[in-house]
Length: 268
Image (cartoon, rainbow, N blue to C red; front, side):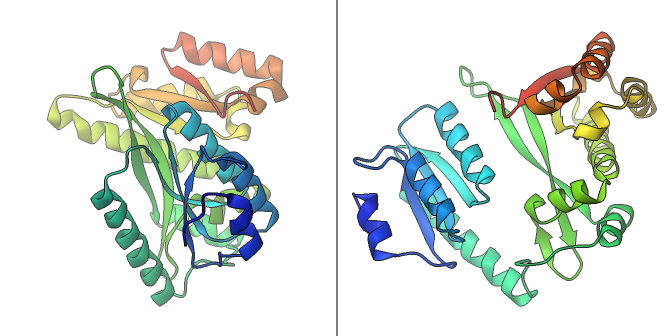
């Protein structure tokens, strides 16, 4: 069904857990951000594809908002959208849903502390890479490392299934160390191509409060014969402000050692 007025969409209740909603951020009477808020209120489990004629910054912010509301985002596009790209995305999503169904799916799965630690220690965690592109040249200048859990029974699990659980169990250090180690392995593997694409890694709140972090990261890089310029540490604004004195101590020493820093979820 196609709706120009989102109010009619909610009036008709035309969505369920298997729905895919193609949402334009710029709509009359009720814009896309308002729709995202309303979907969250309805506890919608449908999948979203966001599109917009706005710049990528606005689209990215809307995507972050949807994630914060625990909504599933398949992808986001700037208009105009190529029909073949959209169809390919829908086919891939359908295949992914089918695979999850065969494996019993991950819906409602709440891993225990021991299960997550086993996943880390048994090498079941994997990194996917989201490229960072210079808009003026179109050249890939970096990539963000995103963790997924390739569970032997549940299939490929998104971070929403296990990140919050890891935070609850106090094992984010172990998970972040795992991501850092895999990122450095990836960087080392790039050497044979005679070019290194810098990687961005999200750093947990607990780890950024560790006064030994700068020395630990430097040591890990030396073992792989890598330079600090190869790693950008992404830190959320709230983490920095939580323990300001300690954060300034650690972040200043990280910069002195040559690491790049960026603020994730800026403005929150």
